[in-house]
Image: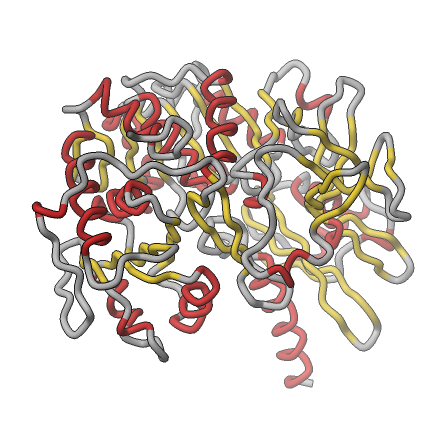
Amino acid sequence: MATENALYARFLRGLAVSAGRPAVRVGAETITYEAAHEKALQWAGSLLAGPGEPSGAVGVLAGRGIDTYVAILAGLYAGVTVVPLHADFPAARTQRMLEAAGVSALLADGQGLATLSELSGPWPEVPVLPIGGADGGPFRTVPISPADSLGEPRPVQASDVAYVLFTSGSTGRPKGVPITHGSTDHYFRLLDERYDFTADDVFSQTFDLNFDCAMFDLFCAWGAGASVHSVPAQAYRDMPAFFAERGMTVWFSTPIAISLVRRLGGLAPGSLPTLRWSLFAGEALKSSDAADWQAAASGSAVENLYGPTELTITVTGHRWAAETSPELGVNGLVPIGSVHGGHDHILVAPDGQVAEAEGELCITGPQMTAGYLDPADDEGRFLPYDGRTWYRTGDRVRRLANGELLYLGRLDAQVQVQGWRVELAEVDHAISQCQGVDDAVTVTRETENGTELVVFYTGVPAAPAELARQVGKLLPRGMQPRHYRHVEEFPLNSNRKVDRGRLAGEAADMLLAVGKRG
């Protein structure tokens, strides 16, 4: 008997109302709920009957294709932990993730098998179920047999881990975050109350499947019997046409997508009329971006969502209102809203005391992970207080008069420059107000004279002296950047967030280049 609080129960809900309708579309290819269900049952049964039943976790190592989505479902149906992996990641990083998660079987396409062949140790011997038309080749292949198909998904407990995702660690070693079926059950029940998703909705899917926000797309859509459409890179060239062709009603992405769509001419007022919901998370959302998107999607509710992986996808939300939201913001940013029901939060000041108005956001509740896969990673991330354990987000927030929270920046985004305490978000905001600038990202670099601020910006190229003149009217001298560099677009990491580490590296390289010329 399938378990009601299992994450896969949401797919079964969709199956009950949309059996013959598309569950996923990638490019021109689609798969119905019924077909995905039958294939997932067959793959799950084959994994369990194959050489060495998965003892704890099943990895999905593949590019984004129809079978990749089914593979995630198959792992859940097998009643084991699913570990979505990125086939483009370096082999050494993938190997560390496999080892940390204790993966004992894999579902992999041709791209994933190519990565697997580069791994050392026992990994080429791990049982592999080939997907996406891949040939298992020299690997220890799991045969797919209709006779082994499960009759229904295996039952699970609320405390069982549904999936493991990896975040970047401060040591450079990825940290595994286990998320239980109970945590996802609480999360999606709240979302069912918040949103009116139906079987007629068409969801975007912009996130890679190893990023937690992808789980929002899949299981919100599948819980309603709606379809999920993978968004290809070329769609951004004419997003209004893509939305019209697909009948897109629910959009979810990082805020950087707004700048990209705007730059390519897709944000004219009324240009996205099919949207009912527009959701953004993963980075700070600017009020100017929210306003432009709202104008393009005038029939849509726009929301700013916030939440680290450790708190199950998102844990706060603010619904944009043109009349009030800009007034609530600081540095041009939209509030992140109120913490989900069933959770408590506190703000911790730099001296370690609980503060009323501003401090590091710490949250406890049913969406919080119990800890990282490696207990050594727990140090400094969890706070014992008031007889409970709280997750330390590392984000500095302010509590507004209405009780909502405002994101001020990462704790490590406050830097000292020549004795000045500088908020990088405040510098970003000032640069963005300069004529012709679309967006700006400020990073630091160390020189023999101390820390310097370096700005990368998109929009119309301008002379550094002119930008400095405009910024001089907005920021005191000690907070003004020393260098400005125009870029056509910001580099993005695999989660489609601005890759600030790469920009900081480029800033350091600029300094080295100057030194060599000297």
